[in-house]
Length: 218
Image (cartoon, rainbow, N blue to C red; front, side, top):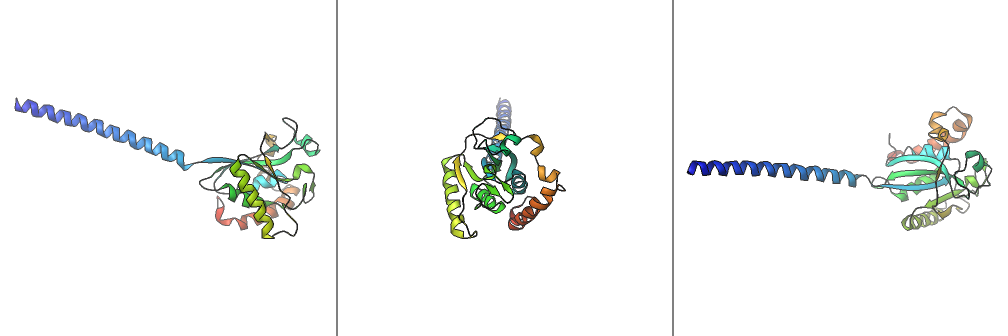
């Protein structure tokens, strides 16, 4: 009788141990999944800083940036084409929509790069690219981004880096229309094209020097 009881106790303990180990494993797996979710916190920024080929090429370099897509925002017509936007009559600006991990790079740091990649004192133009479609603009997605953008513009003006005042527009985000597929990764696929080699490459080289410690491939 004692042996039978002892055997039952041992079997119970074994089963209990097995259940305990299984439960522990489930908890650990669940914890790992939660940690993975908290490690990545994606956010979106929509910015206009002149020709989107250059802006895309710059932001693709930054650590924490998940994706960059060229497109159009701020206008009055739906699904505009590149040809239509280039007329300057649609109200749209050439923009990039940046999806980034805010645990690796903040919106304020995104704006720091934004002010570096173009001249925010030029009204409705960037160099020889002239028109409202090339305007400097921050389309904020929420009130937090709006506050950060306003402070960034103020700080840019107070820095006196530029002789003229910053004219960057701060506007509420409404719609983003992706540009045609051939604009994707345009600079990297067309580095020998005159506009890319003469205009974008010098800007990109300067950008990489400025943000050397924040690049994906240092």
